[in-house]
Amino acid sequence: MKQFLVAVALLTGTLGSAHAWSDLERMQAVMQLSNVLASEEPCEFTYNQAKIEAYIEKTVPADDMEFAAELGMMTQGAQYNLGQMTPSTKTAHCAQIRRVAKSYGFSD
Image (cartoon, rainbow, N blue to C red; front, top):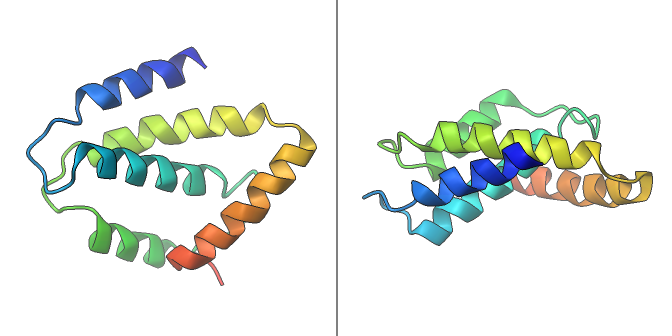
């Protein structure tokens, strides 16, 4: 959990870059995508890798040097949180993430 909080602190310190996204848009995009990606294995999903790449191409500015590092940190935090969930919480989480992943085009 401490690593996750450090990652959030680092993330918020790097949000002031000159990219096309606002700070809030970047944070939301990274957090949302990290939750979806971190859920793939624990929820027993299989995502279409080409669709993930297409989503990044469409969504993330090409000159955004921070996105990959931020995504990695936030994904680690999301993986930690998934490991702490009760079975019922995990069921609810996976049910919604399945819907989100489908809306992103990552799965059928």
